[in-house]
Length: 101
Image (cartoon, rainbow, N blue to C red; front, side, top):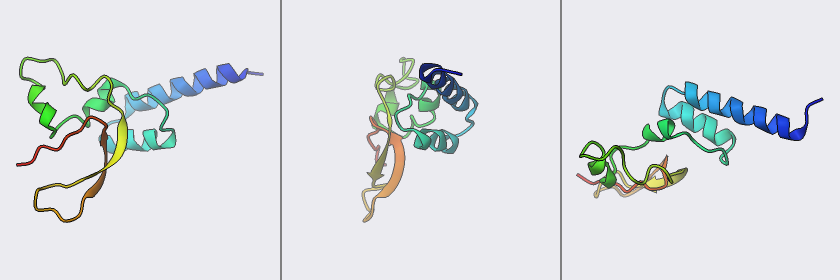
């Protein structure tokens, strides 16, 4: 019989493998929504890292946005343009700041 700690470790490994095999944002969101306490690997976070004001720093001499390490997924309401009257519900990184065009 396995101990509780062994079961927790197995579950953690299964989640890591699931994140590793995720091919798009929706798959990452689906895994995350099952247990929002689970940490998300940086490779998965990169799928959400674009269209933000901080995106200027991606590829402009910096390896990656400096906010990526501490970022977490969270549901947010974001206006897609300055003319929007209703915000869209999206799941994005906690550091996300909309870049308006």
